Length: 154
Image 1 (cartoon, one colour):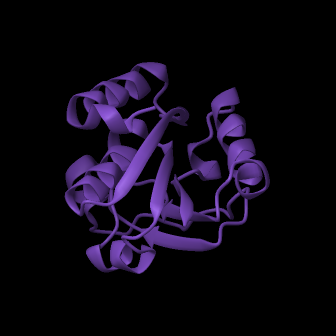
Image 2 (cartoon, helix red, strand yellow):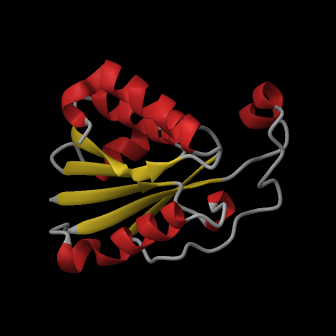
Image 3 (cartoon, helix red, strand yellow):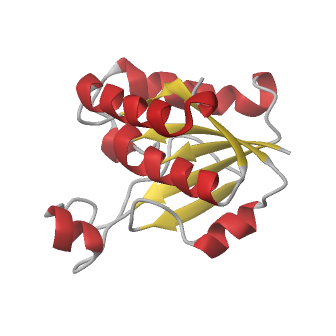
């Protein structure tokens, strides 16, 4: 199956820029026009004394998250940059994954590194990723991805 994996495309990371709307619109059309069989989504949350609070002093999302602006076939909730190994196994190694989402140099990068390490078939659409910290942070993340897995970045 061809899976669109939307990483943390959630209202909390929308900075009222056109990138968020562009990514959400792409997701909404994925199965009808994009040739995908399913859309999976990760949702970033936070918890007191979790890694984001302890190591990054990031206290956002402690009170929960807003509903997504699209309806995925599966949702994986997380409170760290990536997913747990059993969640990747649940997704299925036999699928082809196209990764998009927020934040390019953090959660998107971590999910791609995990897919790489698990030897899953994946690619990342650089034009459908973005960073809530703006274009400079986004391009830094893309540069790291090119360095690590150049052929997967399209």
